[in-house]
Image (cartoon, rainbow, N blue to C red):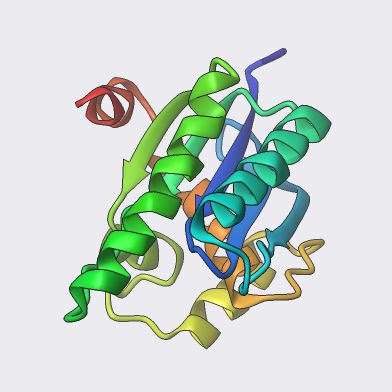
Length: 169
C-alpha cells in the first residue's frame, strides 16, 4: 500500500467456478485492475478439484499482489451435501490469501448487494450492471467474476478494524 492506495482482491467461492476480482482503492476512488474465474475440473476427484482451486488462487495472488482479501459468505441451501462441498471450496478460498499473509474479511451476500446495488435482494444482472458503473473499465466475463468485484467494492467501502476482526473469528 502506497499513498493511501490499497489493492483488494474480492473472492466469490465455488467448487465449479470461483470468481476473483482485483481493485485498487484510494479514499473513495476505485480503480479496476483485473478479474477472472477459476474453473477446477468438474469430473476430477474432490481433492484434485480443491488442489486446482488453491493453485489457481495462488497464481492470481502472486500475479496481482493484493494487500487485503474479502470473501463472500456462502449461502446455505437445502441440500446438505452441496452445502458441505461449497464449504470445502470456501475453506480453500479463505486459506490461499491467509497463506499469502493477507487479512481476509467476510461479507454477507445481502451486504454485498446492498453496497453495490442499493438493495439486498438485487439480481445478478443488476450487480453486473452496477459493477460497470462503479468500475467502468471492468470486463467481467462471468457472473462469478462480477460478484467477486462486488465483494472487493464492498470491502473498499466497509473495510476497517471491524471487518478484519470478523475475519479472525
